[in-house]
Image (cartoon, rainbow, N blue to C red):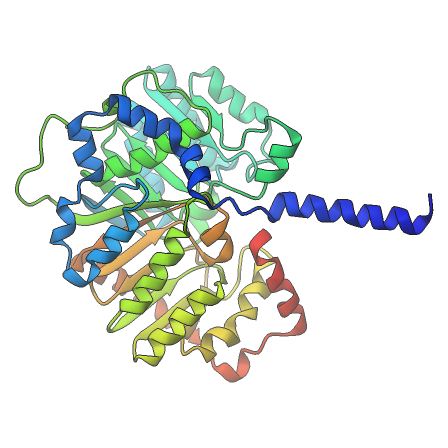
Length: 443
């Protein structure tokens, strides 16, 4: 065969492979329903009226400040849980999360559900793994979703030993065929979820390993109250979609359903919002743009990575031109060499849009937060990049509460002394940075 033909066929094969991995758009109502049909079917067949009220009643939405109610309704579409109440601790210390989580695992009596993008093999990770195995041997139901693509360097024996101890482990990505494996290779479970005894929940930015517990600056949540039911719902949805089994009716996985809510709920009004690449629309991107379009005073973001789509940059520009104080805080040094030039390639575009861009020195900052107008705030797993908005499975927690917002505003302000404000004149990207930004959706 002629060498030129061989080269052309090779290039064609590479193009087809790249299209299978990165080029398929899964967003459609049909794909969304197919992905979530197992939990939806179980809910229709088994869920009590009390559980339906707990998860999907819009009664608490009317207690939200009026101008933010449309956002709450937007986030509750397509079967996602509506607003619930919670008591919340905002965690900005990895050591604090480590100690709280260890204590709650040790005190677990009924069940432990865990879903993480990264679950390491270092000292702290192994300790948590041993505790999960010990709890399973004691009869606690331990269910664990393994993001097997992101954690591919970890040997199978690491998770097989958990299975032998009685931990139910399912892989997020199931490879029925090579074709399906290639088509779903890029779609990662980027969520961070723990639900213990149906009553205590953790979610936010921190994964499980020593970097998060001892070295990096991150933001996470510990929740109690009715909002934990929404977090449990998100976990069970992924659990069933990944092939996990539930051995009892779904209402048994939620607490105090025999006690109807009455009067004012305790804690902050909270909305757990999962997003995934099969959703008919990019839920979190739509929410971020809504916030920018309706903010009156300020919107402040923290994110370790920035590769925002043009529509989000346009929303930032429009908000800034209306006089809204739009700020984005990013770390000076990223944890990956690839993301460093990608981040810097957006400095000029953001500053030219009127964004006050702060670069934080010190330890790597992994927080993904929003605070707006001393009322709305958010902590989640989603970065300000196209991968989080369109490719990965994410989960963010929105709060409609002045006290929570002011605490998040204070956290942002406490980070400012070790930040420098980027000046537009110094922000122009190099040719290398412009080249690297095209890799943002795939890294």
